[in-house]
Image (tube, rainbow, N blue to C red):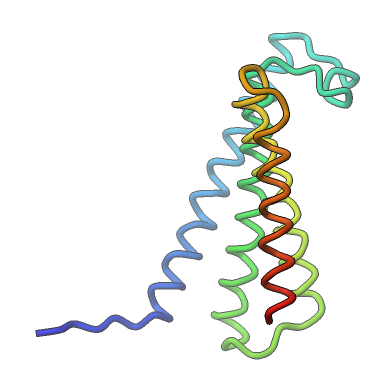
Length: 142
């Protein structure tokens, strides 16, 4: 006997749950970053010039990526819950694009932060090139 599940409910649960957990995680990760910045006496110039310890660098990359996924989950949840999956408006498209930008930047930074010391820049640059090729192909063939 086969059971079927309502995909709308599953997507609402996934995106809504993601929003809640991501929000909590980002608050506590921000607290961690503030504490580390104070403990390590990191100046604003250290942040702007990327002179951060590896653990802080990775935490920032995770924060940026997860912030993007929070925006994406929020847009999708609101769209499904309140707009009944009608066409995207300009505000929704802009918000989703901003979330996507954070996800791409954060994703590349995560790769860079765990591979640069051992492998140099080629892993994150290769990932960027593959992502660009993928997006280009999708747009071209769509």
